[in-house]
Image 1 (spheres, one colour):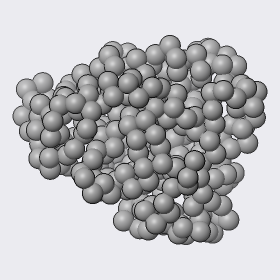
Image 2: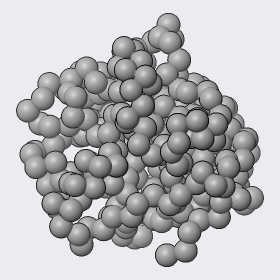
Image 3: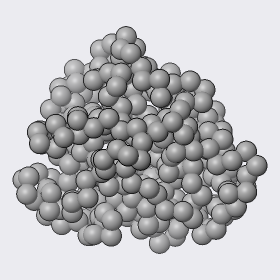
Image 4: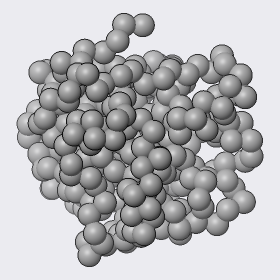
Length: 305
């Protein structure tokens, strides 16, 4: 497959140094489980191509974007997902949190994010039964949005030290529309990893977890690469809680909304953080689905944590 266009990779408005960019290592479901396990142990991620079919992905896109079309944020019901630049979401009678909880529990979405296919795959990869947190981080990212580099450990390590994140692309996401980026070998940045392990994020009083340093400067200083790819519909990347990651800026010239989700998985025998389980989980800060960036009208910028 052709490599992505290195001149279209921006984070927080900064063009990333093309010399520091590399493709994510691609993995396939046709490879042996043992080979995938060895790769995950070495790189702390697996970029799995086309885990889900385009029809399944389009069903999710239509399900989510039809709801957002109803509140004036998306031009038309269906899978296209073009931002209108406007929103009536603040007028929903049930409130923003309840609205987003209902979107996040859509059957087409949950069939992919929590279904039997992904459950079986993750349990096979990690050689024991794994279960998902019920709490789903669904992110519709309009042009201008991105996520700073961060580790997941401060948010999710109360119950298990073996948690992995599954990040799913609901649609094609080329580098100029804001896919995931990882900092290669960042699980070996002992100073940063240990600092994050000392943070248990739960409120606005918690120290900022996101790393505000220029990503190119960080990679150059540490002697590593920044890895991303032109994601395709149905791609999934699994990664550990100690892999530094973020997302590129969505710079879609068509106003196309990047749609993705991340779900945390852990061994079924380990205790589960009660913040992330149940029909209406309290979430990281106790505000439920209302605390998520996805719950905000698409016209409102994302918060940082």
